Image 1 (cartoon, rainbow, N blue to C red):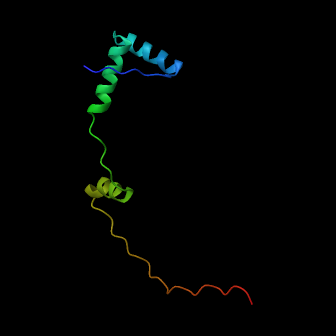
Image 2 (cartoon, rainbow, N blue to C red; image 1 turned 135 degrees about the horizontal axis):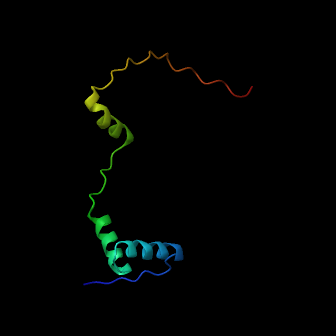
Image 3 (cartoon, rainbow, N blue to C red; image 1 turned 90 degrees about the horizontal axis):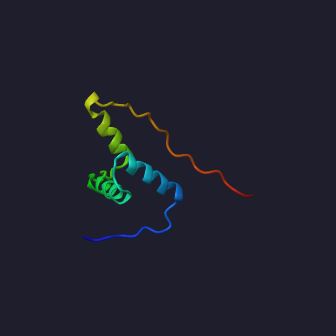
Length: 82
């Protein structure tokens, strides 16, 4: 089995880890193993853009059909200078 060393661990974080391990009746080392195993066994989130995520969430509601507003032709930019 492999082992790792974690340096420069914040004192407050180490204290919270000690308390968490004690509540679960584990050593700090065993608690860290459980935390890492749980974090790394989750499936990675699917990379999607915001539009796809919104569409997927509301697809079951039937969707929305919006009428697009009519657009005027693009105006010419103002002249700068004399």
